[in-house]
Amino acid sequence: MRTSTERGAPRVKVHAKKDFPVAEIRRLLEPGPIVLVSSAWRRETNIMTMGWHTVMEFTPSLVGCVISSANHSFDLIRRSKACVINLPNMDLAETVVRIGNCSGRDTDKLSAFGLTPLPGTAVGAPLIAECHASFECRLVDARLVKTYNFFVFEVVKAHAATTPRYPRTIHYRGDGVFMLSGRARGGIAGSFVLTCCDLARRASRRNRQAEEPP
Ligand SMILES: Cc1cc2nc3c(=O)[nH]c(=O)nc-3n(C[C@H](O)[C@H](O)[C@H](O)COP(=O)(O)O)c2cc1C
Image 1 (tube, rainbow, N blue to C red):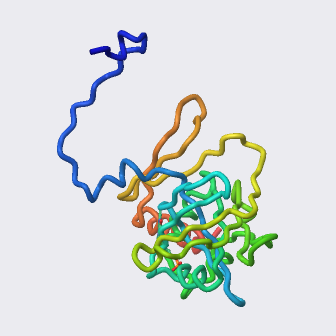
Image 2 (cartoon, protein in one colour):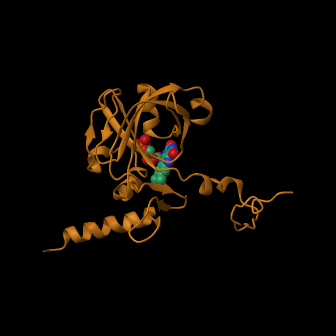
Image 3 (cartoon, rainbow, N blue to C red):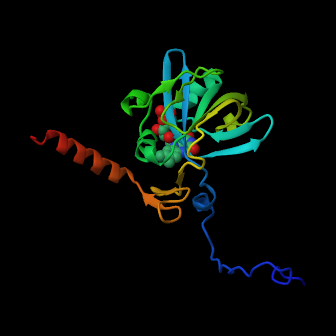
């Protein structure tokens, strides 16, 4: 039998594997970039954090997304049949987590998090000015929404910054652990842990600082 080494490929380390819980495989498969999904219905706009998305086709440009029916965004997107998928970079890491831990049912997240909504050209949902890219999407297939909360969108208009060429995007590994893509200063991609507890601690530190006399 020919091995890859016989064909001239470098020898690559073999990885010994153990049983792995099937419900946890997402920790290894999931890390596409975390995105912010904006939506609008009638006078209301909203934004949510999303990690469960997948490219499905080049032309038409199709993206599949799992949006839980428990989320307020689910209703806005199902009614408007549209959304904008915004790609944040590491500057928005903390904001992205906070947006994913509260609901538009009781918070106007765009203004609460100081994000700038810009009008789209094809859909009613806003583009987020602070994000590296924004993809305007129309819902083209809702057959799997009932069974899997799975929406198939067509990207009908895309907007992207030209620099940096490779933005440092945020990737979720589960359990509050995030990873940044791209090259860090003097090194390679890094990872960081940002849990709800960290966020609560930072918020109370900020509040204390605000209360302290100058
Ligand atoms: C890192 C991260 C990734 C998330 N990914 C998804 C996702 O793929 N699908 C989903 O339905 N919710 C996801 N969520 C949860 C929603 O962002 C969260 O429920 C949000 O509060 C919904 O807001 P809404 O009620 O205003 O729509 C994620 C949250 C975080 C922090």
